[in-house]
Length: 67
Image 1 (tube, rainbow, N blue to C red):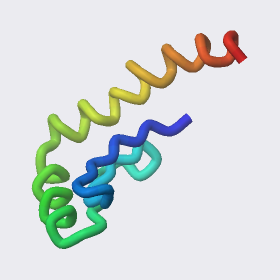
Image 2 (image 1 turned 45 degrees about the vertical axis):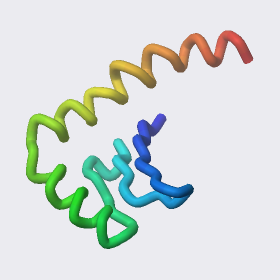
Image 3 (image 1 turned 90 degrees about the vertical axis):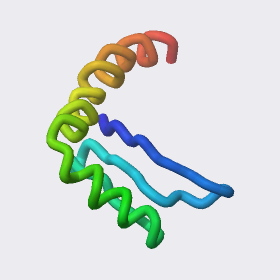
Image 4 (image 1 turned 120 degrees about the vertical axis):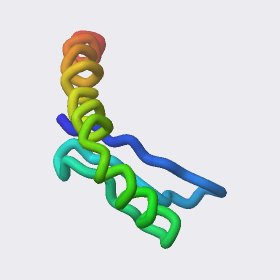
């Protein structure tokens, strides 16, 4: 299970957080700057990493039962 939080502008993804990578990755010049800034914030990174457990792991059981 992987938690992904993507940020888009005009249908172009510029930054993404992936729980398998454990940090933000930028895809445009603006996204790279955002990723560098956000990756310096330890509390934001720990919050994003916790989202996998808080959101994904709780809802995966519901989704498997529905399928």
